[in-house]
Length: 491
Image 1 (cartoon, one colour):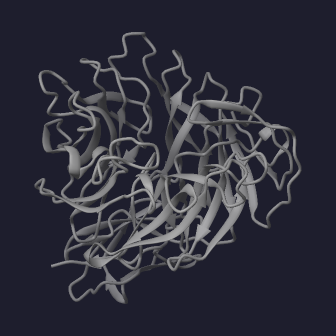
Image 2 (image 1 turned 90 degrees about the vertical axis):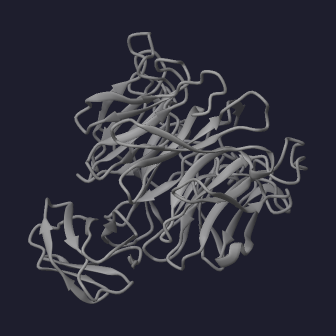
């Protein structure tokens, strides 16, 4: 089903925040200068409540819906840049749910070209699983979580990424019943062998929700609860959450424990990002000076800085309750979403913030008649190599109100994106872009590299001897494209 609408609209209706439905009067609002395009609507049959996108090696977009599909247990889908939506897999379609259900975690595409993701529940043991799916929809289960005895491998996987060593690393939301202790970090080979790396207990956090492998080779993530102090003033839950570092071998260190005034419950529906400056950036869904969540930065040595405090009201002009992964745009600014807030309808916002903390609200959701643009985004934005931002709204859109996929342009041009942000001399790196056929040169911070054009959207280049850390440029028939992030050459 192909749906294209480009508007700068004005009206609103229904909204939802974590399952609560609130009725909104139709209200006019002023438009922004940016261009908004609704690319696709979900209708229940093809999915409902989409939770994030990735851009594939082929230039198409891939993602999952939490609900909808054959049995209302979620789907995996593909969408072309023109908005043609295809369901690749409908979870629990046979009713046995051996393929899992509620695929809440974001898909990733591994270096072998296949996609991987978690489901909250289902599988052979009912404790969730990690699945593999191809661009053509070929589906298989990679690992069933066991949850027998002490559940040391975890239950309810929440995220998975591929590390530089080729293995998958991920998090689970719980591992035993003595709440608030809970959650694991695991390593999983592409052959399906799982190694538990860390089980969270008390001071080091609880319920981890995402991982990032930084350019120093270590992993960083957020535990959405737990930490110290043990009582979070934001809502009296056991701990406000932590940011942690974990080595590939499983040694964990707490980088920051949230206290409430600096944020609470970090990383909901997303992960930290590493900026071009080497700092980590993230959001906390609640807490802060105005109780509506925060944007924070963590620098060398764990130096923590609150960059912005959101207010806690539904109609806060800047938004409230940030969620999902932020993304650093090719212009150096950081972009993200809030689940609620914005105009008087309070259906969420898109925002921009500089690394120094200068904040701008760019778009208010539910600003079109009948919320045709969607409401309550939760999974954050991605920036495509065409320069535009893409994302999902969990509700609104067409007649069923089951969510949308949208494109949001702020006038940025095309660029190339690196599959890995760090590597050694002699390693072959994937570079994604558009219009790459006919490429005549690839330079790593000015040093020419040998390369192979795989397709119009991907080339592979070998890091040359003498290369130093810096941006990668690709010389194409249409002009020179620069990477959106620097590539770090490591020993």
